[in-house]
Image 1 (cartoon, rainbow, N blue to C red):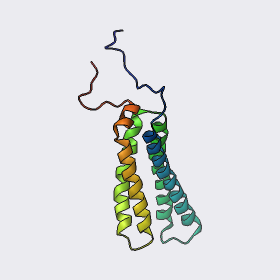
Image 2 (cartoon, rainbow, N blue to C red):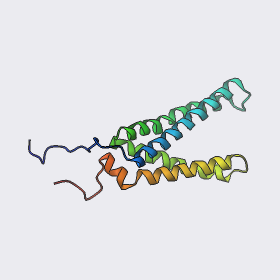
Image 3 (cartoon, helix red, strand yellow):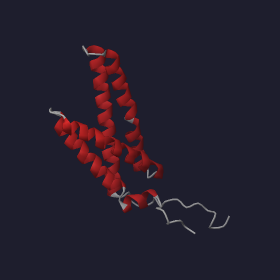
Image 4 (cartoon, rainbow, N blue to C red):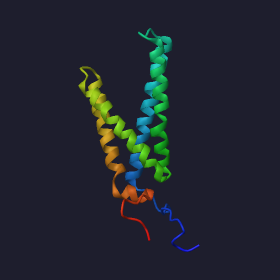
Length: 146
């Protein structure tokens, strides 16, 4: 096999960049928050007096399942898997409209919206950082090795 046919993999022998670790921690934090919210909705839906028990249970299960995306992305980021940046970015992009809706509420949801917006923007900045991209072995357009 010639060197042109040999696939190159990122050098993961060095220390993991802090930006990558921070991005993984923020994604894991969002995943854990979704799990907590989903379990809370399930418990209230089953034991409480919701307006619609089926909707509460469905919402809780949905949040727990949605939590898998950022949790898997966080694990992949910690393992320097290049595929993990996509789900992590998607999670942040999905969080921004949720944060906006929380900010529009006239309630205690406003601080949650601020926190979510800050976490989502910070994670996006960390995920598109060139150091993170290099650590994950992602080559941009036009950076094809010959």
